[in-house]
Picture 1 (cartoon, helix red, strand yellow):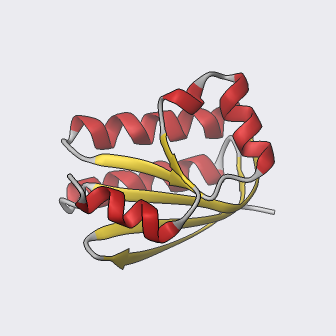
Picture 2 (tube, rainbow, N blue to C red):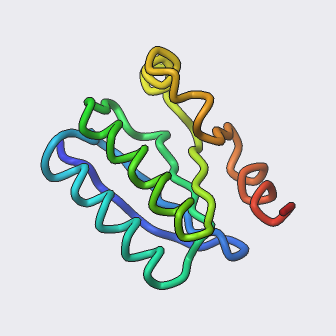
Length: 116
């Protein structure tokens, strides 16, 4: 199953709803292109919803880190939302859990952007 990506806006925050698998090839390229496009449009508050992501490989993990760096370098913020147990475990094993700002609730996550 390939990755699907949908974009929506809430209170100036762009939410990327991802589902499927973020793996080498299609899924990771799609994520990279979407993030670059958003940053180029000046959208610097990005929330990546991983609630329906069933699997992330090392390439997909690299894309999340790359997306984080791209947004941060543009003066923006990227937060992760709704991690599945598998993805949460993966981020803890790789010590990336401390790098990302991770939220469990969409409303809290959106509010966290406007608080700054």
